[in-house]
Length: 183
Image 1 (tube, rainbow, N blue to C red):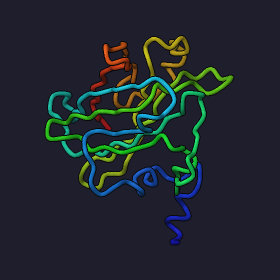
Image 2 (cartoon, rainbow, N blue to C red; image 1 turned 135 degrees about the vertical axis):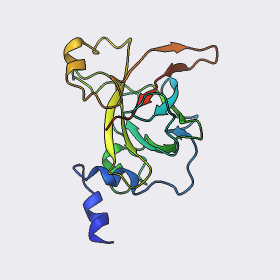
Image 3 (cartoon, one colour; image 1 turned 180 degrees about the horizontal axis):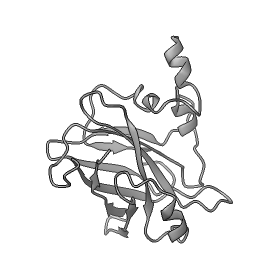
Image 4 (cartoon, helix red, strand yellow; image 1 turned 30 degrees about the vertical axis):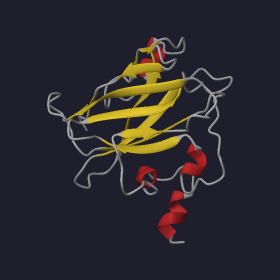
């Protein structure tokens, strides 16, 4: 194991560590968990845009992680590096030729006994070896913990991150978030 890998084996690891274990072949769909994952299925889709807000951004790698349906970052046992702390609900995707992405997961729960709303953390790696960075978390418009005070605490990178979700006929929650990468 190299020192670089050791550096990624920490809850305070550099953001670059989020991308170390990514599969070589990525699609535009980021899947966390699976059909047997406890919780309510959730699908969020959208388009990544360049700073002009009009041009789709092709080839951006997204890394996301979240809590389970109890508000914990649970592990399955095979996680390595920073994913040991992010838990088993994590994954990667690459925006397609139209800048589009989809996240398929379960609706996360807020941390137990906390005042932070349920959320999905997302980091992006733009093409061209730019340093990766976090964008504002995905939070849900119907979450009572999404307050004006909470929203003021968010970094404005990628927009506010508020996703309006609705139940579909297929029994899942579905929402949409376009992201303008301005960093």
